[in-house]
Image (cartoon, rainbow, N blue to C red; front, side, top):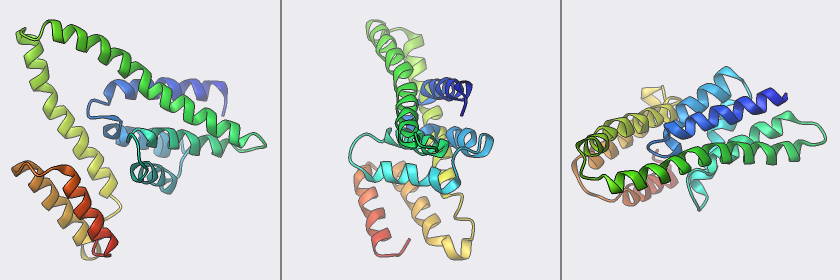
Length: 189
């Protein structure tokens, strides 16, 4: 990778930081397009493994960004592969966290001072559909390799039931995650 490749990764992840309204997980489809489809720096399995491992690990779910950087840094190879991996993890994670954190801090202070303005209330109401659409596109991408309905119908059934329960009830998401994990451990999905 050239210096311009690293700069482009940094700028792309900074842009994704500003799109990560529902959290960094909502930017997975664009990360996939950039890292796997467009640049070819990560394989499909490395991309999915980065997300899966980070979600299984304790801590913030944004860790998958560092793992993606780690994996494509390792792909640079050579005798300095470990150094490139650390650099990839640091560049990606810093680029995703810094712009949105600074912007959130500044806007939150302003919005709190002006919380009674109609524009502030309208902005908050308008963000809900955007967050829902980004989360749905992430779910669709993560389930896209389940394209054989005869074989994968349990996965789609669990996805549909979970979406319905979230939409119609106030059941906490951790219970749904625990049920999904239990079904996976039993081999039903």
